[in-house]
Length: 138
Image 1 (cartoon, one colour):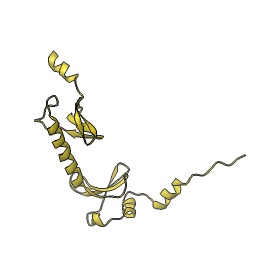
Image 2 (cartoon, helix red, strand yellow):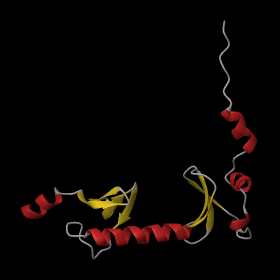
Image 3 (cartoon, helix red, strand yellow):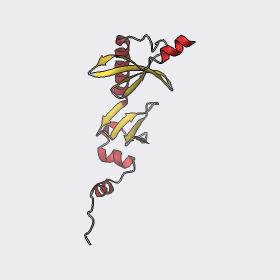
Image 4 (cartoon, one colour):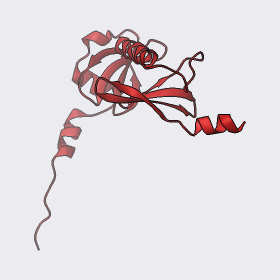
């Protein structure tokens, strides 16, 4: 109806601030969500994006943060982590790609060099790429 269409134009709706960051509720391709601090948290089927409260948004953000922290096994840098995939298997996450860890390997004992080796990165080549040569003058 026209009233429902007009209500949808009100989205994204700012709910408030949490931890110094703005919380917005909107409806996207995969359904209603909360946008907070660069993360997107899905609303449950019982939550309405037009009426969801500030307290409920905070509750969902905390649930998501707790779930994400359980998936992290070890973090070496922003680009290199050992995490659990959606089936619970440990994997190396390197530059936004996932690499499987062998089943017999203990993920808590892996070093940064081991993780890079699993990701197929040659440490010496990475260091050599970082050096830039200057153009010769004619």
